[in-house]
Length: 227
Image (cartoon, rainbow, N blue to C red):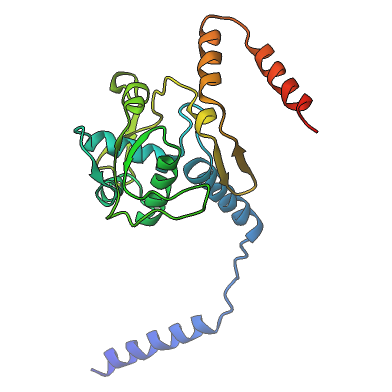
């Protein structure tokens, strides 16, 4: 019994001596960590939140809204609250951002056929709550935006579903709708362009004809009309 007690006391003594020995401190430079983390954060905000894609002219939240509306499409109107809830399967950033982005798409009156009070961009009136307004895809969107055979897919944020990387839009949607966003270190602001002029320019581009003279003429007329 005494031998066991002595061994226990020796073990405690050795541990106390180890605690008395000064430990070497490891110094981690914050500059390298900050640079790496900041670049990761900046690229995420630029690519996943604020700046639209050139391929389809949509930000990720807008693309997920359009994909969800296609999933729910049966030709009838759906409550916006229902569309927002469905979009949350693909978009992990909350219902408020989805509802606001959907209202912005609807107010441009190109991709979404609306029903109810969607606000007014000229007077600044806000749209009604998402439970009171309804939406469905416009005929233009159904014809121009979707094509499952030519769409590249990726897993959603939780890996349960597939979402499009880019939608195969047959029209310069980015120029038609315009875009505005503030990211980390950069921002984007593209004004909406005239729908008919975009169609004429697209046809001439597909035929291999130049349409730059239209732009020059347009700007020339604008400048000559200035007082």
